[in-house]
Structures are given as C-alpha cells and as structure tokens.
Image 1: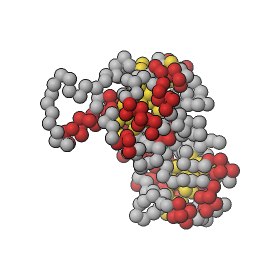
Image 2: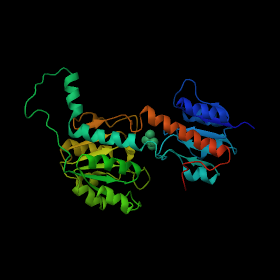
Image 3: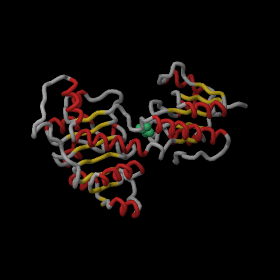
Image 4: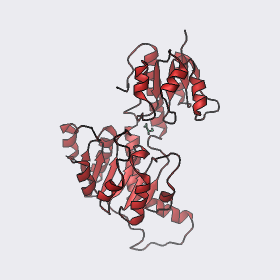
Length: 324
Ligand code: DGY
C-alpha cells in the first residue's frame, strides 16, 4: 500500500519532491504550525511524520497516528520536543538532522558574540531612531575579542565549529561537557588548544560563554542565578542552543545589575515570547531563533529529513537516527 506521509510544515522543494515520490504526501494548506488537535487529526493513518521543533510529538501523537506509524523525522538537530522513549517503546524510529546545520549555527553564535561585544544593535537602533550622533573617540566603545577566553558548554559539532571561529579571532578556548557528557577527542582538544574545565571553573574564568548543549532535564536552567553569579561581571553569555537552558529572569536581573556585561540570545524560554525585562536592556543582542536559517542549510536539513523518512519506509537504516 502507498504510505501516507504527513509533513507538518512545508519543506524546501527537493525534499517535498522526494517525499511525494515515496508516498501520498499531506501538508497543511496554507502552511502553518498545527494546533495539537489539528496535529492529532492530521497524523491519523500516517506511516511517516516529518515534523519541526514547533510540534510536540509524544505518545498521544503516535497513538493518534495508529500502529502503522514507522518513523518520525524531525527537521532539526535538537529533539527535546519529542518524547523519544514513548516512540521507541512503540517501535517507531526517530530521526533528526545533525551535521548539516553546524556551520550556520556557529556563524550565528559568533555573529551574536560580535554583535553584543561591538554594540551593533545599539548603534543600529540609534541610527534608525534618528538620534543625533557623531564620531568621537569614546563613542559606543565595545570589547575586543583577541586574547580573551571563550568558554564552550558542550563541545559537540556546533561547539567545535564555534571554537574554530573563535580561534580565528585570536581567542583562547576552554570547554566543559554537558552534564553527563564526555571529554572531547584529544585530537579536537589539540587542534583547538582547548582546556577541559568544570562548569564552575569555566564560568569563573571565561570572558564569554557560549552554550551548545541539548535541552535535557539535566541542562534545564543550567545557567541559573548561581551560575550567572559565578561569571565575571565583564563576561558575555551567548545562547543558540535552547532557551530553557538559561533562567531568563535571572539573566535579565544579572544584566540589569551589571553583574554581566551582555548577552546574545537566539533562543528563549517560552518562544516566541521574550522575557520583557530583556527587551528593556541595551546590552542584549536578540535574534528570533535564526541559528540554522539560511536557504542552503534549511534545504539541506529538509533533504536529510526526507532521506531519513524514505529510508525507514523502505525498510532501510536511516542516515541519522536518534538513539535511545
Ligand atoms: C535545531 O535544529 O535544533 C535548531 O534549533 C533549528 O534549526
């Protein structure tokens, strides 16, 4: 029987074409995020669901789909929105899209670091608001990165890509594994001249801290008031991982008090909401979850997600499964 494939948000054309060839394709018209009820109705009878991080995929969604559901393929590297054990228990394969968004995400993380340390947002706001300004030697001075220490939390693929960019800007690298994570390969440590530290030491010594860990019960609010108090008052925090890794209220308060120099945030605790206190602060560079948002990267993510779904439908091993 022709498999039914549900795609919750429209993907790049090549991926849609590949899925259309593999089965009966359904996606919402017009393209939009489905409500929980719409999602449950849409997946009924699906053999494959290709979803995004906006969709909460749990046992209830699997049950709404029915016992024929074989694969949930998310178009994202992070999969904290998926109840993987509940799906695995039901024999459903879960796949994600690591690798293809590494450079785009690291570019954005480094861009946020440059943006907040060089006060680009402040400068742009000043010009757009048509406020008077003139060049002078003490005008909108930022902080240079050369010779400073970047602390990376989670030296996986994206963390390594961020560290490479930082090395090219003359920064020293220290890193810590995500809780329960392992020390990096010695070859990676050697290439980056990276020192492994405990989280506490990393927070205490870094001039900028960049978060590259997945959201898990162990990393939720990993950066809380206590962690922020450990950081230097001259330090910056960059988050392109998941919003809830940072306690946003505590961050806003630390920034307001001058206990931290600034932050660059691409992700938020309750997206698309942003803690109102953060919006009041000039020393925060904000982006609306754009880490992987380039045409090239989103096309590659969609194609990989399609390959994953089609592989499982054909009884093959998918390229990038999520393991239990
Ligand atoms: C991911 O893939 O997890 C990003 O957050 C969105 O691309």
